Image (cartoon, rainbow, N blue to C red):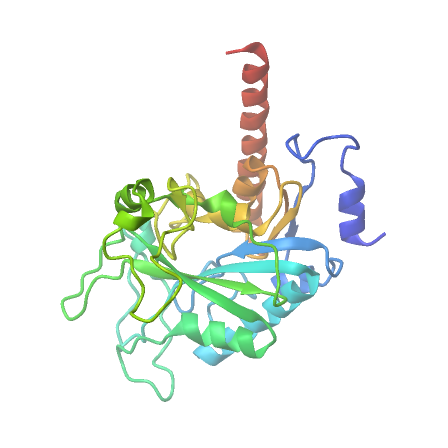
Length: 335
């Protein structure tokens, strides 16, 4: 029996989508190889953050991020996401968080910082051919364009703004306080639940919505237009989510480095996967995507190369399930 067919056969018959979802697994091994064991058209969405180029050595043979040149790094990721393209349903989406890197400029590796382990950069490749020391490489857009050329629809770049970013000891540029999240789709039309991630409308919008349309100063169209003044749509209380997300970085006990926060993953899962659907993360790490998927009543399939991180992620997802069961018991008892 194919792997995904086996997983879906394990669901408890008769449960509503809001009940506990019983499917979660984390495959151990190389991402591309493990993804080949999954059925085609079986996953609703993928939310992931692959290892960044030239940043850290996780001490596991075959890891991504240790390549000598950016092109090799991009090539390996394209291979992984080609398999994700295969396993996604025709209406599936990929939410890809990726940060940029600088060429080393000949600097040595930075040692671990006991007070702030996330600052450690224990791997620095040499300056790639064709680039200069201290160049910003442009990894996110190199990857985005490569995926587009490989058949993905590149739908949006989302800015992850970090209000409390990791400090940098630089004096010749600004401190980095953002990363990218790319929304890519398998098809021209795809599942996207915009209502699930609406955000509060601006106060100025609420005021305008409360006005009679004839008194909305500044809302008239250009002279010669016949369809009258403009009035914002919606209910006046919410609006379509904007493309700059301000979310503070997060840490998870046991993880060696900073992990991407659950608040960053939540809108991706809510918009990209229906309740009871399946979320995939081929670079599971400490299990952020899996924990969010379980809490939001989605199924989860992960892949992780590092056995230590796999065990950590399984424990984290299991704890999420226990917390949910406790909440259900409290709700049932009226607590």
